[in-house]
Amino acid sequence: MTRHFLADDDFTPVEQAEVLALAARMKAAPFAAKPLEGPVTVAMIFDKPTLRTQASFAAGIAELGGHPTLVDGALAGIGKRESVADVARVLGRQAGQIVWRTYAQRAIEEMAAHSGVPVINALTDEFHPCQLLADLLTITEHKGTLAGLKAVFLGDAACNMGNSWALAGASAGMHVVLSGPLGYQPEESMVERARAIAVVTGGSVSIEVDPRAAVADADVVITDTWVSMGKEDESAARLADLAPYQLNAELLAVAKDDAIVMHCLPAYRGKEITAEVLDGPRSVIWDEAENRRHAQKAVMAWLQDRR
Ligand code: NVA
Image 1 (cartoon, helix red, strand yellow):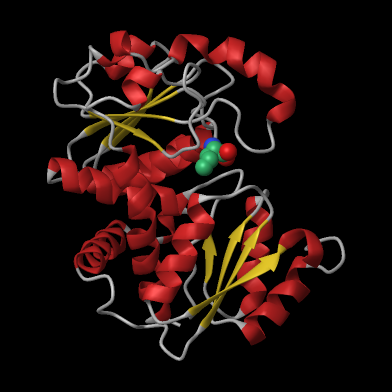
Image 2: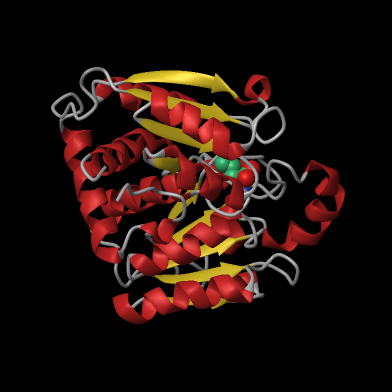
């Protein structure tokens, strides 16, 4: 059966570890594996803004011997001009894999149900699973391990990155703490879904409203924009509600001395994170951005093997 990567827990903990190990090997030898030789076409569709995702997928597909083709989401009018199911059926006849950044999780599930080829979530309102694999690869490089580490996600913990941290961090056996005020916490069902994974891996998932208590003794401190794509109308309220969660030097001081700082970017210096921290010695954000390519190559290669 065709496998897809629509949410972080589409990979079991063992599969996640396999994909991360493959990503590390691909990073060490970027041109060695050509599973998309032919070239196989990979269709990339973006319904929301992109920089890292488009650039890293295009480069990664080329390095795997494949051919990236950009399908303009606005021109295609997916779900408006044609149903998601019909678009999926058409793209599945032209492309070997489909990468989609869109809004609703149920839309990408619909794409996967009808495409006949692997579909990869390049960010939805609900999840950002490719980013999480890049983040886990980056943590492994800097810390040598994942299981047992304390990772704290600060700010809008109800956004795609908060959800993905809960699921992927739990899969990796990490102790994930999501710290945001009421209204910015993941749904209970998401926390339960992540905790069911953590039971198996030895990790944990908790919510902590107080940012200082959350960050205490953290190994990894993560934040993200307070205004995710599509939430621009709520900007003023979000900036006010989330101000106490800014990742600054004072807050970082309560983490472990060797804690690393992560941000999936784009970052807004002076809002969710200070310039001093983002551009400081603890920050691993550029490794994180580079690792998108290596992690996504591993995902594509892994899915290509299991069509
Ligand atoms: N939570 C952010 C992630 C950006 C990569 C957003 O959805 O805009």
